[in-house]
Length: 303
Image (cartoon, rainbow, N blue to C red):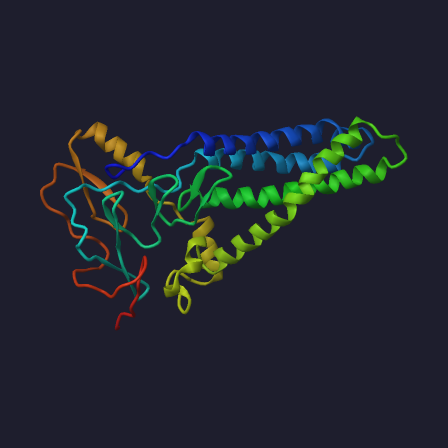
């Protein structure tokens, strides 16, 4: 954190995320205890089985996303030069690595410093206030699982409540009907935004786009990260995530030495102890200026 910068309050955002988990658990408890129980007693087992199956991945993904590592990159050191121009090539497109004044290093492409978390996140998508965490390279799959399972679970709960009203329309008003109304109203309110969010994420993955890139002019005509729809989905769901940077930094600090320095020897960052010289990077690095602009101006490379 730069000198003179006050730490951001964490209690209120964390409380908001905890309320979301409690809201999901409480409404689900009312649903399973009253209208879902009534449907099961009447022999309509398809509704309890379907909603119960969808509730488990929804709750697990929501809790995991709250505490997951989005892809936090190491902070650099003060001796690194912010005026040094570094360029990285991606699919014949040059990206000028932007200097992060908070973390003291040149950010790789698609790496953004989150002002809410005060960290640089690899392959940053957005900061999700519902879970008080960033969505990035390491937890994007968990985010997709949450959005898809929550959308299906909300639709299943709403359908179960409607089925309960149909099957019990001759019954007098009871606690079961009151709880069904209390559950179906928020389910109907949240269903449409969840479905729209799921559709946006499906389109974004298919086109290899990120949420923050909607305002970037340099990707409007050509996206060098787009490898085709099928390959984009494979990279988003099945490709290896690579090393966990913060865990490796802590391990090397404890095993090697407390005096360790940061060395950019790969497209990602890595830590080494007491090294005097930099090894050559594996990606192509240019030492000449390359245009001006926002996070990543581009130029076509001649082949």
